[in-house]
Amino acid sequence: MRGFGYFYRHGRAGELLELFLVAAVSSLLITRFWLHITHYPTIGGHTFHIAHMLFGGILMMIATVLFTAFLGFRVQRVASLIAGIGFGLFIDELGKFITRDNNYFYSPTVALIYLVFVVLFLVFRWLSQTRQLTPRENLLNALALTEEVVIEDLDATERTQVMRYLDQSDQSHPLTKALA
Image (cartoon, rainbow, N blue to C red):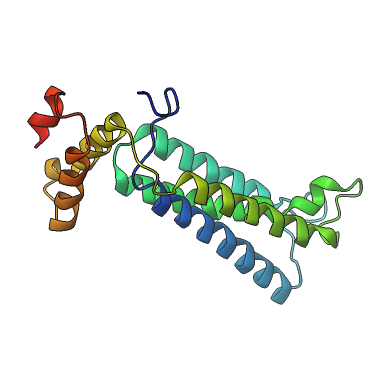
């Protein structure tokens, strides 16, 4: 059984997706608050306007590099946080991209942003539901958690989770026995 083809579910995806969403919403609210109290300053002088959406894109790119270049759950948490902040900065500029006159203050934008976050919440909730992982997914998640052994930081909770994953893995697989 292959899960979703080549897409194997991460047992701790819910935590990462929740961090992303909370960071995105917080980033958006803090940005809107900051812009309001500072009377919407611009970066770039009279000729240019460097939109904060660009900073959001840079943060999302940094998160992508972290996800791609480094191993481990710790970096996944940091990358989820950075990606969420970047997405919040990005989505805040939505009004500029759906109007002909680049109107940041386009009134339906707030409702559209709210809708985006509701849809993300529902999709993330669906992705992180506690559906039964396949034996292969359990083994992959156990293997991923054993990184804590290598960096000498495996606590009792993580050990219990590894053993739970291994108990639900294919018992005939040689790696299941070796990890146990």
